[in-house]
Length: 315
Image 1 (cartoon, rainbow, N blue to C red):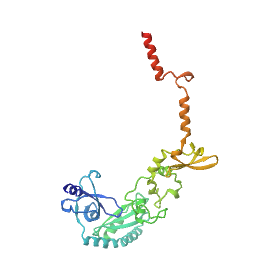
Image 2 (tube, helix red, strand yellow):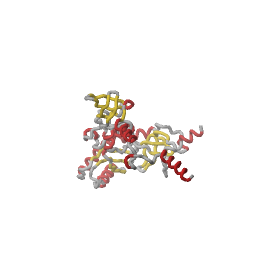
Image 3 (cartoon, rainbow, N blue to C red):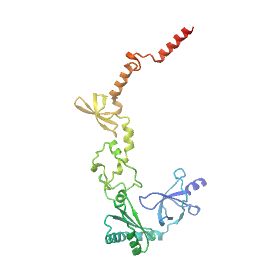
Image 4 (spheres, rainbow, N blue to C red):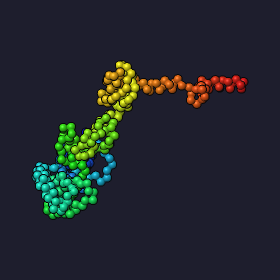
């Protein structure tokens, strides 16, 4: 029981938003009764924050971190009520921010969210803009005087905007980013090509204007499956006769083959790679390319004869 307690009281992962990243904190001896699901108060770079314990972090999973902070205390009912009270004021704060930005003629920025800390000591405005040189310091000072709290202006990307705004994706389901994704993976056009998806912007672009997050979900499975299936245009032998591959159906582990004017779906175990077999046959029948006339005199058998002849000459 002592070993288990030591493992469980080392480090925990705390999340400050529903789909936010996990931050590591020490529990300490005073809070060894913390369980996943509990709300705790911790000290961060943005002041005291209220977060939820998601899981215990094992030493193998944890990267080396210096200066890791400890949990200050468990959240009490008053903390939870204060958090709800300040959350109700966030919409009014966002509206005020947009009005002040308009008065200051800040037109090329979109303010998407206002977020209070649980005790109202910190107010963060999330905004996005294509103008990388945009200066919002005047707006920050104006809002700080109005709300009489510490104000932070945080620039976010298009994917984060879509995550905050929510809504439905092209598939008709709620957006992945606002449903379960906690981090964004790197996505490239190569992933769409490997899965045979149309490269038209309507097919591969999400509501955020970037490549869809779902392109990464099955990419590795497609890459591995394609290694064992012939490519389009390859000649193959099938139970229906010789034909050419017209389409590769990775998830079904099969290909669509054109044979004598008809199309058949043929599974991998039924295929014969004719081009490869013919290439191997020609290579086996051809003579050694290193000698004239194709005659090969560099094999192991010839080498053994040489040694015998050499032995006779020496004798």
